[in-house]
Amino acid sequence: MSTEHTGFCPVYRAIGVLQEKWVLHIVRALLDGEKGFNELARAVGGCNSATLTQRLEHLEQLDLISKRTEDSHGKLARSVYALSPAGLELQSVIDAIDGWAKAHLSAPTPPLPEPSPC
Image (cartoon, rainbow, N blue to C red):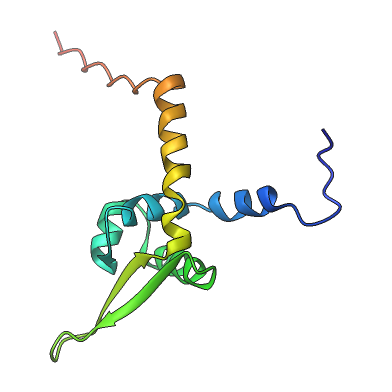
């Protein structure tokens, strides 16, 4: 099989989108239902706000997520994110990764406790 890309390759394009850091973590978190920005940041864990904002904007441009703004009655408006129908179709991708990981990866072993000083 040739690895040279002379035209549009949907698999190559999809891998390019999904391999961006945090993208699959965002999708996985939103598979549980819509989330506000802070709730999503906690669910993803470890992604700084600027990067999360950038990824969410890109996923919205790709029509994988939707964003709506809730009026917070005098407070700052709250942004709420949800997967679009196209984004929801990524459930099968997450399920495939889960199945593969369960079959081929073992859970990391916890570090051994430090020996006590004598």
